[in-house]
Length: 152
Image (cartoon, rainbow, N blue to C red):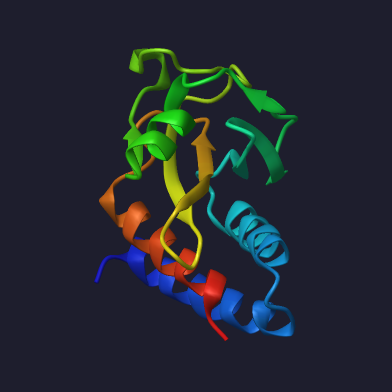
């Protein structure tokens, strides 16, 4: 196992201990964001956008001020929410329609969030101020951590 996956496993165990006090997914997501943002050196911005009346609105985040509402059906978050699949962008300047909430963002990973029935209701959005910061190991580690959303 790589050092990165080992780190995600340690963070998984840490977050698992923090979230046992509530089943509220917003509290759980906020805790996940805080731990990930402060423990992963490449994470420049870590947050959640949710679908509200067919708009993607920021719910909670760690890092610099973010866009409150994302331009309709444009950018990486909408691509992940619309497709239901993780989107990894090595260079945000090469992604058609990228929404630059902060010019320091260079690469990004966005993972759709699903409710208990499997319907996409938003996304976890992580930006880095370094190009090519994310790969399939990040997707694997983050998806494992997100599996804690509905654990008891």
